[in-house]
Length: 278
Image 1 (cartoon, rainbow, N blue to C red):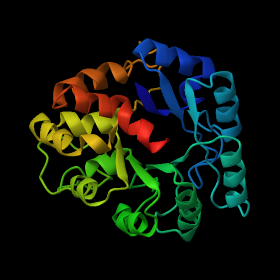
Image 2 (cartoon, rainbow, N blue to C red):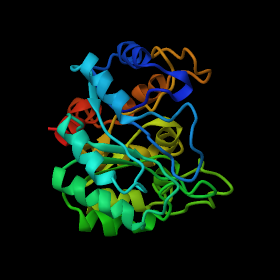
Image 3 (cartoon, one colour):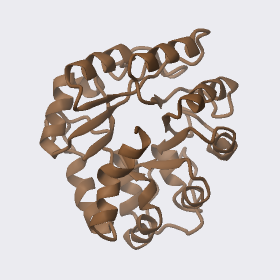
Image 4 (cartoon, rainbow, N blue to C red):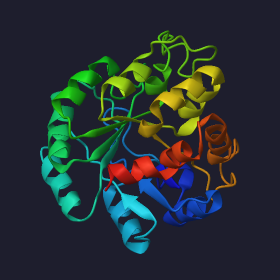
């Protein structure tokens, strides 16, 4: 298995905790997603995680860690830094999680470089007060403009759009109840060959558990585009340091239940991720 969404620093996690988590859930590798700055929603914090640390971790465990990079896109040297990180071995960009509209030209500037690199780019979409990559309706413009970027959608507002009926994000970011067919995510995964979906965290779980009958069809339609991922802050793959418990302990049985067959499950657990960073 490849866990396509892991961090260092979140809930006090160390590099050693990331490896212990992989061992605990039986995963071979993780995409390690730095977060240099959250632009406009607070500077420091335990979840700030520079690319340098991702590269250092990959150097220690080269067979286990796939390093991504992230920069503060407001910096004038953003593109030069991403280029340097690519030369040092980074394989993708993200997690892009800043309080900047998705239509901001600085995001397009970064995507143009990632398009040249043919990279996957993981976006955290969260509408509402925090406004992280707000304006998800702009995503098709970017997917068409940058066809060689592998867009990886993640988080609350991405997964809320599995349904055509999306509540006001000020009321809830985790909608419950039956999915109304025709949601943007369902349509975009079918229409755009360069869109993929990160199944991590409570948002991914909620999208698949709120209406399992719909979810079974969703997985059947899009298994080539779905990525196993946890974004789990526990330290050992068994829930240490995170009272709700390890995310993978919920996600893995769910995927085994929903996948149409063994080949589709294997694609979700590792095959799709391998293609994106090949």
